[in-house]
Length: 190
Image 1 (cartoon, rainbow, N blue to C red):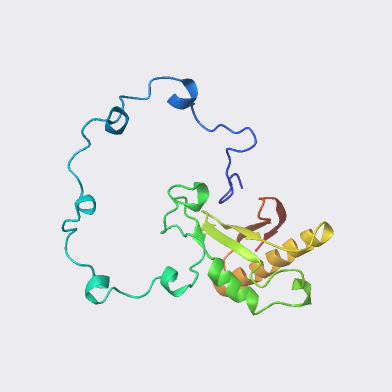
Image 2: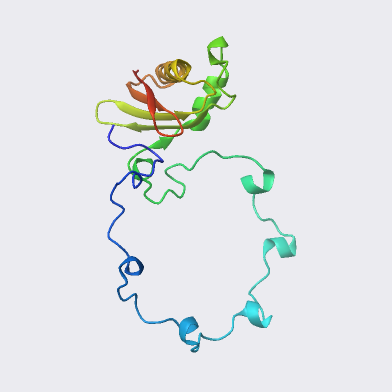
């Protein structure tokens, strides 16, 4: 696996792109109206207290649609390919699908004593994409274990993931389980 979801690959001496005009001291374009004190256009409705358009459903008491996660306090999980990922590497636009919610539900039903150091929602992200011949998955998890226990917990997450893919999807591929820091601690084939 050449890329990892969600990791900033500019750290550690990676190429962050060409320098900006500000970094080089080069010409950054003409000054703005704000910088010159020039005309910035007519005042807005907000500035004049004028009409800001038709009233909203909230103002009229009309139906505004179902409540959002923000309104209900619910959590919809990390962004999926359909959400705003704006080309965030392999997590956006490269065929990765967010399976976090589904995998967490499966895992919650199969917790054993082997999961004692894993928090209730140990899996922070589970992404899967289909290759030509096999699938590829990347799972990020958290644990309180360190050293040997970290690797054991990573293998446990990988084992449950493999079981889930075989039982629910009957497909095959490779899963890499990593810490929040991006360190891969277990890899398994399903």
